[in-house]
Image (cartoon, rainbow, N blue to C red; front, side):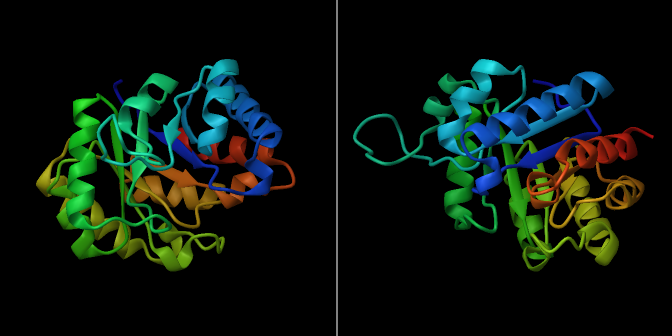
Length: 226
């Protein structure tokens, strides 16, 4: 799949507001906004909600994590082949809430390449950004863990982190798609991220727990395509 910019990446995490029937409700909102505004929105639900969402909506779905284990005797592991057959187009790797070692990260990226899954890597500091970019993932989400879930966006609170990350990543491989994560929740956060050179934004709590998630997502989407 060719990744179309600009885009929004929504991570449902394990919020109650994004579980089971509530996950389907949010997926329907994402589907509606996608069709109304013609924007690309990736969604990453909990594993138990992947099939129900894919069965009902035409949305690009990412797993929240995947293991590099091979098919066979690996009880409890989530392997790339499984999420691929479930209909996922990619997976998040090394999120700050599910961190991996550099070796594990590289093995997971390679397994995604074998199974033709889009690898979306998270990085939380300059050193990690450079190390991971050298492994040639398809996408990278630049985040500051301390800002996650705070409503304070990386693009407005620490724009220098965004600029440095873009420079480092693009010097290594300009084909890596770069997204601003952590704290993105308003149209101003989105506008600033794109102004700084990001190709998309990641969001979670600001959308998932909003009183009116459709209004929040619509505002973010409109800011992204202006």
